[in-house]
Image (cartoon, rainbow, N blue to C red; front, top):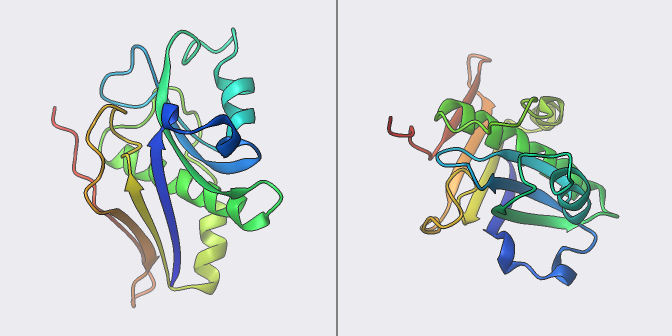
Length: 169
């Protein structure tokens, strides 16, 4: 089994130095986001937020910005980038399942990274701690952790299980 642990904190709880050269996953909640995030992404945190989400041309986050950030490691390392792609894709899958898919995501994430892991491991598990990236940043943190598990059943079918509930309508 391959396991990935990620702890999300509110964006304003990270220091600039802590985010320098770090790879991770983030959810953005712009000022008009109410029940679903504006965007979920992965990559070099400062670069992505400053250059792609806080520019004058990006209406999703230019006026007000809040969200959750989880760090997986330094940009010089290969594994954190791969893990960030996995976490992003699985969070987007869960978001779609529970009717919280971000309003500005056009892609469902890089599923090829998950497929590569499942070629070598029967199960992949992501443990999300801290702030729930699929809920508003002012929400109470997760008690304990929420798991996303994907793997192969004995009959050869893929399964995905997660600890999130459907959004009330």
